[in-house]
Amino acid sequence: MRIIGVILATLLAQQASAQLADVDWWKTTTIYQVYPRSFKDTNADGIGDLKGITLKLDHFVDIGIGGLLLSPVFKSPMKDFGYDVSDFREIDPIFGTMVDFEELVQGCKDRGLKLVLELVPNHSSDEHVWFTKSIAREDPFTDYYTWRDPKGLNASGHPIPPNNWLSVFGGSAWEYNKEREQFYLHQFLAGQPDLNYRNPRVTKEMDDILGFWMDKGADGFRLNAMPHLMEDQTFPDEPPSNDPEFTPDQWGSLSHIYTTDLPELYSYVFIFRKVIDSKQEELGRQMVMMVEAYTSLENTMKYYGDEYIEYAHFPFNFEIITNVNNKTTASELKAIIDRWQNALPSGAWSNWVIGNHDRRRVASRFGRDFSTAVVIMGQLLPGTAITYNGEEINMEDTWISWADTVDPQGCQAGPEFYEKFTRDPVRTPYQWDDSAYAGFTTANSDKPWLPVNDNYRELNLAAQKLEENSPYAIYKKLTAMRKDMNAVRSGQLGTSTVGDDIFVFTRYLQSADEKNVLVVVNLAENEVNADLSGVPTLKSGAMITYHVGVNSSYTSGQELSPSSVNVPARGSLVFLYTNAASTTVLASLLLVFSVILSLLH
Ligand code: GLC
Image (cartoon, rainbow, N blue to C red; front, side):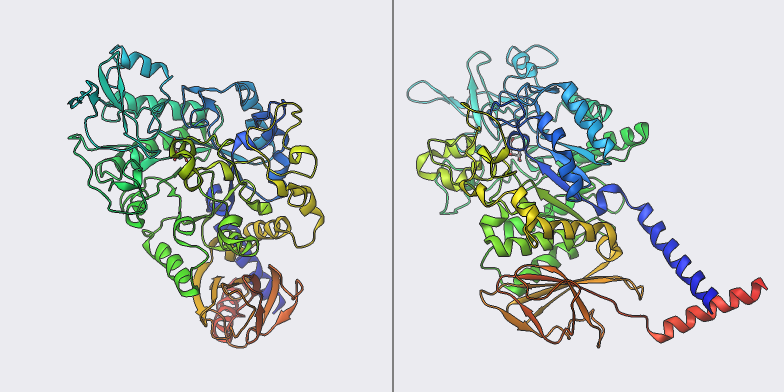
């Protein structure tokens, strides 16, 4: 009998580890977006740098991260803080040198961390040599960008743009160039001319750039702003959106049917994927390709490819960022999560993103308590988890005055509207400790490029390391669960609601003795006593063990009946449970093994 037990246990363990060995590194881990300007400054100029990231690499190991996602560090005049690139193969001196980059790669390697780069293929900087040569109509650069003749001249003799297209940052998407006597398209800043992907040479340039960075040690890319890659070649005016929230020169005032989500853009996603796959084969290193696309759910799913061809490994899932807010009810939350999971093409890998450098911080969107609930969801829902720097300590947005505003999206909106559009508040320096400037910089006379949040004396990493149930401590427990628990890595998802305010999800495996996960989220402003015994994936009579949570009165390891669970206001609790094997399954397994044993004799 004991022998059978041992064989059974060994076989089950082998099966589990074989399953894990098969999965790609980016699937089961957390990818952490570092915004380099604000992470750690080592040369006292008030701006973060590559050496700073290398210096802090142990932080990522400490909090259980598997891969870094580095926002752009390429050479740039910084009109859009690095998203306007003047040389795609150089490191900007503000961030350091190529040697610093190589040291970062080595430091990551030494710690088993992956390094993924963020890159926007849609445009370069107007200071890129391609653009200078394109202005001069120097071949082969003449058509590297989208140039159009003026529609005519207005009453005061100024050239009229080819159509009504608007820049995401506001104002016309066309800029007149006197030298070439034509307008060029820029869907973002005038300093960010759109590259023309209808020219195969441009595609080849971008392919080579991706290859260059993978040769340098990058483990993949997040390709940004992908919906903007292609535009309608007949350049028709776009219709009004009739959204009263926007003034006529704001991007939201038009419906972007000719400048975003064009069907042909997806074949470029495939082209980039091929480059990444062939480098993966050549270098023997597993790469990841992720996509940033703010678009409809239907269009987002197209980035996965179709049943025959896989495009991106995954497009970022912005459902929590764009559709969940403080007014969301439990049943709405369930519907949003189910809708995403159900929309996934078969075999597609899920992911959950809760914040980034473009959107308000989780803690500011939801408040401190509920933001931890959102972090818990981001970590324990199926697929890759993405963290934006600071989320692991619950950093909040920093209010920035108009005078201190530097983000072009804020600046272009003007003093009246800047607070609605500016992204500066989410980009302020990381709060390491309670020393001057939160330990971000040693700059004396030079202040950090953006003000440090005033709350840094109490809200910082060092303080949270000393606190028992701090956001940092909870975060570490969650990433450990991703590492240790098969149910989190590959378990199925069950979602349900209890009453009006409680959203519940489980991550469970069919195999009987595996530990499963039960997450209970209270969306109400008051404590709720919930009866969870009807949760479909919980076997009747099963007990649940409290593991981690926000403001809970339970202690870790405490066992309780699911029929009466106190969930604190806006709180979120994580329990573990097993659905012990049914006797019939066990009996048949034992029967199979006794037959094997008798055959061996
Ligand atoms: C991407 C970046 C954003 C940037 C934009 C234009 O969407 O996330 O920060 O402003 O590209 O470059």
